[in-house]
Amino acid sequence: MYDSLAMTLSRRSLLSTAAAAAASSLLPSKLSAASSSALALPYSYGPHPPLSPAVVRAHYAQLDAILTQPVLKRHLFPDPVIIDTLELLHYKDSYLCRVRSRAGAVGISISNSNQMQSLYPIFVNRMQPFFPGRDARDLESLVEEVTVFQSNYKLQGTAIWVPLATIEFAILDMLGRMAGLPIGRLIGDIHNPQISVYQANGERGISPEETIEHLRADLDVSHAKAIKFKLGGRMSHPENPPDRSRRLIPMVRHAFGDDMVISADANGSYTPEQAIPIGRLMQQYNYAFFEEPVPFDWYEETRQVADALRIPIAGGEQEPSLHNFRWLTANSALSIVQPDMFYFGGMVRCMRVARMAHAMGRLCIPHISSSGLGYLYMMHFVSAIPNAGKYHEFKVFNRDLPFTCATSTLGSTDGVVKVPTGPGVGVDIDPAFLAKHSVMTS
Image 1 (cartoon, one colour):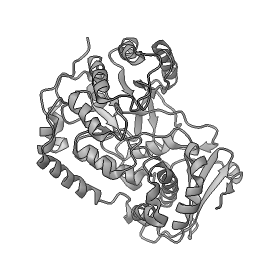
Image 2 (image 1 turned 135 degrees about the horizontal axis):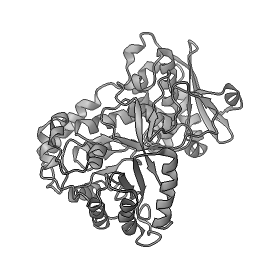
Image 3 (image 1 turned 90 degrees about the vertical axis):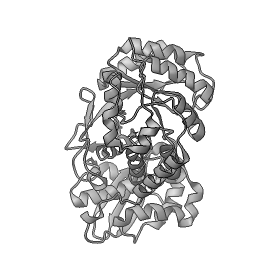
Image 4 (image 1 turned 135 degrees about the vertical axis):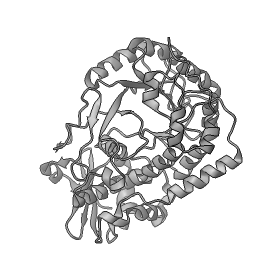
């Protein structure tokens, strides 16, 4: 009834010899229509032997060349765009960044409020002072230089990346409004003007029957053609109820049928010895991908699981390091990279990850925090990458934020959301709401 996803080609030998585009014709025909359309990965899966050192060195050389390529289309701005002020604004649970150029151009971003309520002192004291007087056209170098400013690199992780992403989104909004272009066209070409979504269920600690019931209710709203749910106990904690995952994997397939694209996220619940049998069960029921089977910073173990399974392995939601993504892609540990727009420090850094993945024939399905307008930033990013997965997580927009969008409803219509095409981020925040905010100072 379900495809075994049996493959006959070695993805590693294929990756070491052929460009991703040329290899796309080698996808075996045994993939079901749902799985092949959901993944469209231009190589086959394991099990397979480790890559040779020569192949890994060749991958690193290719990735290093890619990392030297610019992201922001600086040529769109012939004259300097000097930042005059950059402010963090606060009202109740809302944290906004407002940037203004000396010529009067303005950009605004909505931060991840769940994180910023703890991180605002880092924004105000260690990040904000760096930017006034700088040329916004130098955004890529500014992203690098601010990590050295006041030794901010010592805080690497969400502590600096969330504030930096908040700043970057405001600068991109300002530049987009100046150029009359959406953010996606500042950092790439538009490959995906609309995005098909998957419906995610983030619950643990409930029965398989309750999980399926909640997924059905959510699908009544989004009408998505793909779903994802949680496995295990999260970061190696015991699962509750016991054996929930082994029951849930076949139950979800039976409940939603062969045409539904299904994936699952373990959030680092397992050791390799535990993850591999779970992955084989997912293969049996034709799941699209297995996300974070082991803790996110277990790099060798992630590759061990990938080597043992045919199902694609996804990860990167918690990854703070570009260099670690380089290792994960060069060593074929991930089939799908998932940098988070906020947790990884913004679109410039995420674009570099997507480009490395593209060179190695892999997909990018970015993760995004649910607070603020995080989903909107993810949409703009996905619109501009050629190797986006077919389905991306759907998060209902925060309607507590009063804004208007002239070019998209921002809702899911038959499982598809249209990316805004207006300048900058493509939405306008209610001025009366902005006026309620106060400027945060040190």
